[in-house]
Image (cartoon, rainbow, N blue to C red; front, side, top):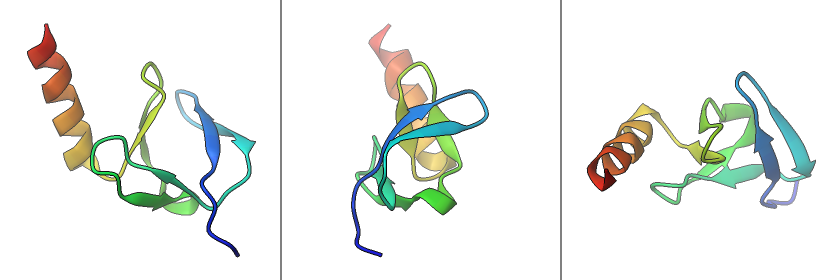
Length: 66
């Protein structure tokens, strides 16, 4: 399969594929995440995260903005 960035809409327990692709990009680290490995995202921000470490970083940065 050719590597192509997918476009998704993140929902509370799932996501809809708007544009077919094989990966998305982590909003914090910039790492590629294969769709079959995607486990972490934020519905409100519509962002994907590579791992819990990136989730923690994002929430910490949001808290510091307040």
